[in-house]
Amino acid sequence: MTQDEHKEGIKGMANPGRYGIERVAYWLMRLSGLGLLAYFVAHIYETSNILRGQVGWDEFLELTQTTEGHLFLAIVIAMCVFHTVNGIRVMLGHGGIGVGKPARPDYPYDPASQNYRHKIGIYSAIILAAIAMMYGLAVMFGE
Amino acid sequence: MRESTIMKIHYGTALAAVALVAVHILMRLTMGFAESLEYESVLANYKFIPYAAMLELILILLSIHGFNGLRVILLELKQGRVYEKAVSYGCLAAMFGLIAYGSRTIIMTNMGMI
Image 1 (cartoon, each protein chain N blue to C red):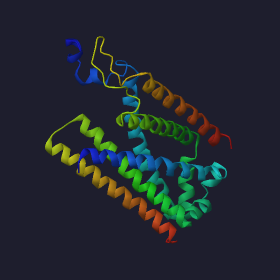
Image 2: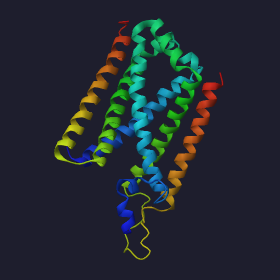
Image 3: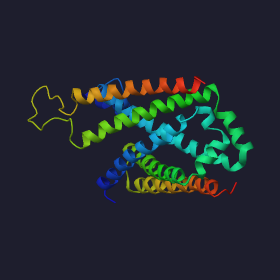
Image 4: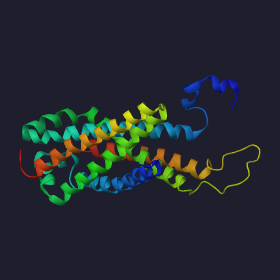
C-alpha cells in the first residue's frame, strides 16, 4: 500500500471502485443487511396492524399495495437474494472451502482466497438477485 | 460469550431462517399475491397453529441474526470498552423488544383477541 493510499483514511478503505469485486461484495453485503433489518422491523410493525381489525388492516394495505410499494418490495427481494447467496459464499470461505491451499507467499502476492471461485460466487449472487427481482415484479404487477 | 460462538449462532440462524422464510414466501404464492394479503386469509394463517409457530420461529431467528449483524457492523466502525458494551447491550435490548412486539401480534391474533 502506498503512502497516498494511507492518506485517504476511511474514505480510501470504503472506496468500492478499488480492490475489485470483493470490496463491492463487502459493501453490498452490509448495505443489504441494514436494508433487510430496516424492512424486517417495518414488516413487524406492518403486520401488527391486523390487531386493529379488518378496517385497520385494509387501511394499511392501501398504503403498501401501491406501485411504489411493489417497487420497494422488489428491491427488498433483490437484497434478500444477494444477502443469502453471498452469505453462503462467505460461510463457505470461513469454513475453508474454496479458498485454496496454504502456500508460501510469492511475488506478485495474489491472495489465494480471492480466487475465481469466489468471484463467480459474487457475480452469481448479483445475477440471481436481479432474476429474483424481475420474478417478484412479474408476480406483483402480473395481477 | 466468545465471538466464535456468536458467529456460529449467526450462521446457524441464517441457514434456518433461509429455509423458513422460503416456506413463508411460498405461502404467498399458493394463491394470488393480493388475495393472500386479504384480511381473512392472513387471519387464517395466524390461527393455523403450525404456521403461527413457524412465524414465531422466523421472528426469533431473524431478530437474533439481524441485530447481531448490526452489532458486527457497528463494532467494525469504532472500538472501545464503553462503546462495545453499549452497542452489544443496545442490540440485545432492541432484539428482545422486537421479539416481544412481534410475539404479541402472533399470540393475540392466534387466540382471537382482536
